[in-house]
Image (cartoon, rainbow, N blue to C red; front, side):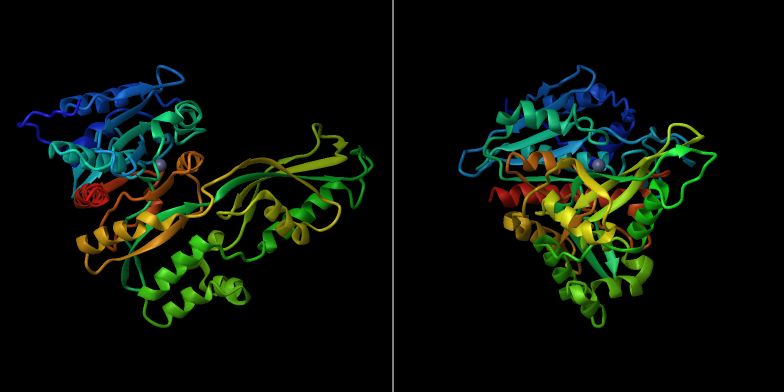
Length: 442
Ligand SMILES: [Zn+2]
């Protein structure tokens, strides 16, 4: 078990990331087995015996545990090893080579999230190499299938192997801790919450008939009106507690007039006007202040010459943290008007309310690593595996820290060509994760 030899040296996060990138774990199909085996061996070299849990042999998940003294709840570190496709993207380096060039490690997954896995694993192994029992267990978990349905990954573990995580209160994973320049200040947003999936179906009806005898004001027209309304109007402003914490945190660190802008975004009478005024710059903030329903799929007639008596629209609905599908329906009613049937096709509850218990300790680590940095809470408009672990009462913090040059734009590289991470940022993150493990167990 936990008995690394004196000579054990934890792996360098840079080499670890290069090796992880070299496994092509494009999902679908995933094929995460070899990559997971590599992590299994890396842990074995440190004297840590990991277990594999899987729904399908080609798609295992790994769970390892560093036993503590039982004086603190276990802390969970988890990350996914699958990546999204590179097909049709103009890469300037081979995406699965793990090349180091111009101060970056290049390759699919460098940011999302093999880079994070390398930070978490190297931080964990550094703790192991100290040879001391921490007060609470530390659980390291590498999962498959985050980029698809998680049926083989986190969802499988949570639904079938929940006992592995009993007693865990907090977890570290993607997505956060990377620096972001706003108004000349360097923020470190730490994810404390995320929106929730709430898929919607809208149906409108009208007289059908033969295409040679057009009808006016039928189902097609009604759908046209519905789409136009959904395009023109936002749903009502809703300020939820984690989003309030995020904007207030940012406002506190910014000089005037930007501090005023950020705090005023929380005043519903001003929110939409300010968002319109700020334009493209405020686009990432818009979905954090509203429930959203984005039209994605239309279905009308099956035949070219048949006028549909029914047209349906599926919308990708996203609910703010802590809210329920009823809130979405209430928000939609005034926008969609009468005569439109709406139903919730699917709802995946997310973390209920952010438990900020570990936030200040994580923020302090970043503040120490970068005294000019301003850590702040952050809410993600997308979803991650955090929603599955939340079902077990686990609060995830997005904590894969990176100190990035102001010129390096993180977001456009996610899922895109030439995904890469600065070598120094990876080392910064690995060090911060190690500090977090020490702090939690001090
Ligand atoms: Zn990811």
